Image 1 (cartoon, helix red, strand yellow):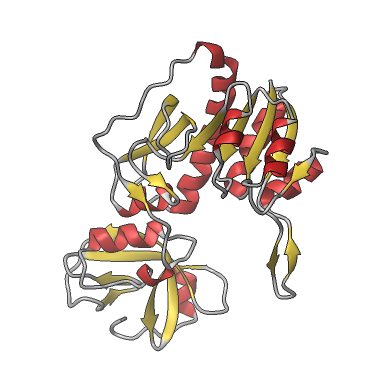
Image 2 (tube, helix red, strand yellow):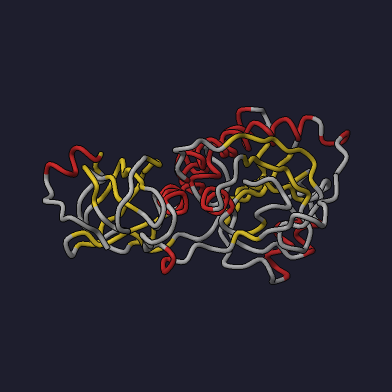
Amino acid sequence: MRVVFMGTPEFSVPVLDALVAAGHEIACVYCQPPRPAGRGKKDRPTPVHARAEELGLMVRHPEKLRDAGTQAEFAALNADVAVVVAYGLILPQPVLDAPRFGCLNIHASLLPRWRGAAPIHRAIMAGDAETGVCIMQMEAGLDTGPVLMRQTTPIGAEETTAQLHDRLSDMGAALIVEALENLPNLTPAPQPEQGVTYATKIDKAEARIDWTAPAAEVDRKIRGLSPFPGAWCEIAGERVKLLRSRLTAGTGAPGQVLSGLTIACGIGAVEVLEAQRPGKRAMLADEFLRGFDLPDRVD
């Protein structure tokens, strides 16, 4: 098929690669504009932009899609379908209507659960047993369109957002290739009205750990916010990110260090497996403890 690809972050790159490998013609790649990054604050292309240039594909990165000229350029591509994954801009109705088969979105949740911006983080933080990817026919509402295909996967007991992100990206890449192969024969299934939840954007203000919470909740926050923005607590006056953890046996006052990096919570305890001090690289617990005099409690 003749495809317009619309995506921006690292999550989208395997999907672009899969479409190219499957032999589809990529008419154009749309992504977010380069943004200032790094110490020099120079404009840096997004991961999709960089990969598209490596593949020799045409790239466009409009600030918005609402003006008539941009919409006319999009329509002039005469695409069979647009594949959208973590693009970052709202698609107006003229854009949604332009491709022959419309616009298909790869969404990293089991819709209608976790519509919105942060479905992977929220699934882990909520303690969901499973998640997955959906291929959705896009419409004007926020992730409200009918679902063409879906695939489920369990969430591991110690899995972080980073790890689940990579698995779902690969799943979505394989599933969209299958969907395009069978597109004329797929029947869109409307999303049920029951079970709708919204994965609101992660706010850095929610990243501080409350040790009075149950250990299961603390563990899910650590894993769900890893690597970004990173759940954190204060240890000896330093703001330390906790990046991996697991539930473990132990009781004590909330925030009490029981042994190693095992810390008591309101109910139960968590064992921190990986942590990061300010200005340092992430370290496994044993290495972290060798360079840090841990107090009796953390805040």
